[in-house]
Structure formats: C-alpha cells, structure tokens
Image (cartoon, rainbow, N blue to C red; front, side):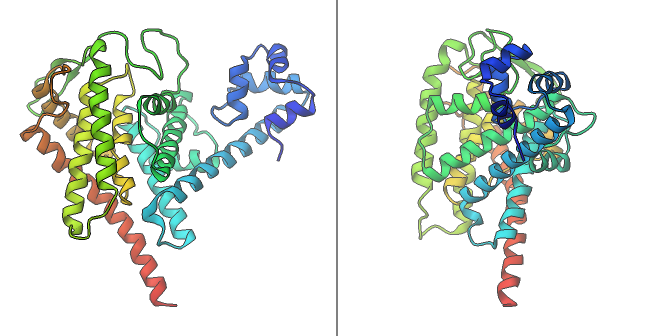
Length: 359
C-alpha cells in the first residue's frame, strides 16, 4: 500500500514544494509521513488536491501506514521486555498488547483522557480514530505509546538516562504544538507553578512546586539516584527471595516516582513521565511494569496530596524524597497496584505451562 511519502514522490515533489502548494507546514508534512501525527480533514483535502488523487484513497493509505507504524511499535516493545521471553509468540504478543494498552490508557486517563482501554488498543493496533473523541486525546495516546516504546528500548540497550533523555520523553508525551514560550516542551519549566492538592482529609490546599531556578540541581540528584537503582537492581541476587526482590523494587519505584513528582521539573506532563521513568528499574530487572489504575485515581491523588503537603517546596539542600508515613502509604499503594499486573502476567505464564504440559 502506498504511503503519503510514496504519493509525494510519484508527483516529483519535495516536502518543501508540497508545503508551498498546500500551505501546510513542512514540519507537519514530515510528521504525517513518519506516522507521528494524524491529518485533519482539511489537511487531507489539501494534500489530495495537490497530489491529484482522491481524498478517500489518501485517507486509506495513511490509515494503513499508521497501522504498520503502530504494529511495529508493539512488536518492538514485545522484543524489549525480558519478562515475555519464556512465552510463545502469540501469548507474548497478546500480553504485550494488553499491557501497552492498559499502561497508556491508565496513565493518560489519570490526567483526564476519556478514551477507554479497549479503544486505546484499537487506536494503537488499527491506526484509526474513535468517533466523538478529540484530536488532543488521540495525540496523547500516540504520544504516550511512543514514549513507552522509546523508554523500553533504552531499558533493553542499558541506555543511561540523562537530561536529554528526559527531554526526549517529554517531547513524546507532550504532543501539542508549542504556543506558549512560558510552557516549553522538551526543556525545564521557566516560571513558577503550583496546584491545589487534595489530601485524604478533604481539605484542599495550595502547593507551590520547586522553583524553576532550583530544578537543574535537584534533577541532577534525582538522575544520580535513578541510575544507581538501575545499576544495582538489574542484577538478580541469588540470595534474595522473590518476595524480597519485589519489595526492593517497590521501594525503588516509590522513590523515583515521588522524587520526580516532588521536583515537578516541567510545566506539564510530570505525572505521565514519573509513571514511565519509575518503571525503568523494574523493566531492567526483567519484571513487568507497575501500572496505576484509573479506578484508583482518587486514592492516588489523595495519597499524593498527603505526601506533597509534608515535603513542601523542595530546595537543593533538601532530600528529594522525604521518608515517613505518607511516603510509606504510597509505597503500599504502589505494591497493591503492581500485584494486579503481576497476577495478569502470571495468568499468561500459566497458559504457557499448560501448553508445555500438553505437548
């Protein structure tokens, strides 16, 4: 099936020339050709007119190209996750698809996205849109899945996470066009920001996040902590039981997650990034990801509110994670959330054992 790039080349047009004929930005055409964004109806009409082809023909071609892109993404993640290795190909693919869809759905839903888990899988595997849902919500789904794929590849290749890697993930999850220089994408925040937190007692209070000038120093300490966890937990200690190993990884997930949220280095997208990067030590250790369910959104927000009010506004001389009851309550919450994923993975392993026993 031909792609937008194929049709453009058949018309002997460069991206710049096509942009001039349609009035569409070169960056947008490049993004459409690479499967990084979806074309609006007006954009499709202008492109089809310039390429002298039927609109429906171009729409079908771009849907097919998007499907190939998303399928390639899922296959890559499937090959990057070590905990899938013992499964047959069909079971491995099915488990990978369900986890990618649930991870993307749950993390975006916690931030207000209304696309369901089933529709998320449909979007990612079929490359199609869901009627009644906004372009922004579709872009959030694709952006999170792209960041997940990138992060999973870094885990497999033992890529060291640094500042540019974080910025790259941020550019993936923040899919909207930059319209405000005071809310940059792919770089640290530049002005003060805060939020009304909702602790467990129901009394909302204002919380001021870390000052923009203090972000670099605090992030430096956070990155050092993340890479320490990555290097020490990736090697399985034969003297550590599976229960103890899970407990150690939960501690790591908790501190990475809370450290990042406490610093709040970006103008937006901090929660999605925190839930992504906190999973790096788990995946490096060959374990499944920890997913925070949308159904637990209120509990999650309340517990984060309790912790946020305790730590206050972080400064460079502060510990990036404050130990105590509020932190431990979130650790226990995360442990319960991870159990759901571990049980799901165990179901697939049981299916594999049954197959092995029957052959």
